[in-house]
Amino acid sequence: MPALPDNRRGVSAGVQLVVLGASAILVFLIHAPYFTLPYFWDEMGQFVPAALDILHGAAWQHVAAWVPHSTVPNVHPPGVMAYLAVMWSVFGYSLTVTRTAMLALAALFFVATFLLAVELCRGLHSAAAFAALVLLAADPLVYTQSMMAQLDLPAALFTVVGLGLFLRNRHAAAALACTALVLIKETGVLLPLLCGIWLLFAQRGGAQFRSLTFGAVSEPDSPDASARRGRRLASAAFYIAPLVALAAWLLVLKSATGEWLGDAGFAHYNVGYALHPVRIVLCLLRRLYFLGLADFRWVGNLAILVAWRGYGLFRTPQWRFVWLFFAAHVLLVSVLGGAELERYLLPVLPLLYVAMAAGCCVLPALWRNLSLAVVSAGLLLGLFLNPPFPFPYENNLAMTDFVELHQSAARELEAKYSGLPIYTAWPLTQALRDPAFGYVTRPLIAEETSDLRASTWERIDPGKVSVLVLYSRTWEPNWGVLRFPLVRKLLTHFYQYGPQIDRAAVFARFRLTPVMRWSRRGQWIEIYARNPSAKLPI
Picture 1 (tube, one colour):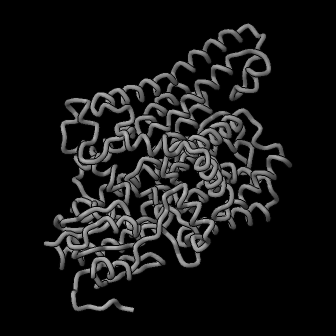
Picture 2 (cartoon, one colour):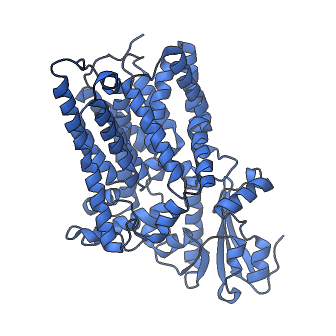
Picture 3 (cartoon, rainbow, N blue to C red):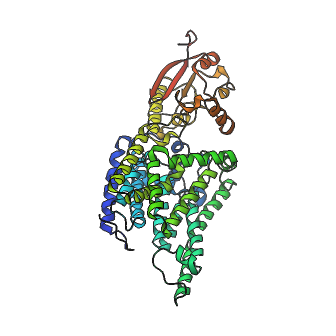
């Protein structure tokens, strides 16, 4: 059974180019149906508007122009938005250019994961690195995020690059990757912090020195031990650069907005609101479910456990650092971030799949192949099947259903109601107001409500509403967990959940009746208009 060589030589440039080419072909082929897909949720709400501000502004002349003004400014650094602005300035602004630019980063993400797998799986079956890529490609979250103009997959790319370089003791290059990382997403600062701290401990002598060092080292009492410790201490200093870069961005943000995080509301939601002990515990449980059980990941995690307990795998210094970063990142995104989105876990998904591939590769051939097949099949099913509880639509192809339903409704609204105020909730309002997002060809009059809850509509003057649009803003199928009173009570108390206004209430309060409805795989969108002679349909 062939194994990866147990030496410190890297993968040849030729192999890297082959993997890059194959990854690019795969990524672009499997996303071919969605090259012109209109933007979704936070793409419209934050990242595309911020990138357009850079494209159309004077960001190249003064630093304050890097702070968005057409959307709410926040702590997210401008790295991805600047990248998109450059792509648009070269190739022109379009949905296709945006999707292509993000998919190019996704292809690099696959290559970086392959190189990290080679580093961590030395001495194991030669298929381990390729198995990790198969699992990563099958992951539904990776599939959707690969084409979306958001921060998390680019942040995952530079996390994997920085981590791989750190494990190979290439600290200057790793610090440079980490600098790019923190200019993409502020939570990326965790990696350079851990790298620097690890090296500070590694420069100590004795057993600690040997246990924290990657690769062969001299004994701590050898003549060059002091010099080696000095070099490691100097290497730790490289990781100050990412901290300085992030601090510089925060200073720019503070100068332009008066807020260290860009906006007081954003800061409260992602820090103050998130730091509730019950929400932290529930979020951590949600993270553990997603990484440990969902989409048949439990089979791969069982292989990890067997390999660790039965074969002593994952006990090298490299793996100890990987698990340290893995746990720290999961904890960080469980404590911070009011939305609690699964995409925050993208930086650790490659590590999980490399570990699964490594764990499976120490098993007998039958169990190895069966385990990898079951996990891959479970991940692919997760691309199409929705869970029985509310979840972010961007986690799988529900995102495309959402966008295409809204696109159909937007075309109908533009054709028949373009001169009337259209009452609905964000993000549909954003889609109707700006043709740049791919839904309409001219701006419509959209009146925004904070949500679609019945209590929200009770505060709106019925005389002003002649067109109203409702849609499945939250995933709550009839067969889901929201039918249980205890679940609804928990979500109402800690997450401000409330039932949406229904058809009867719309008719009773606004005298509006449904004129068009679209549905797709459990999601729906419905247009209501005023017709005084109409009766509520049954």
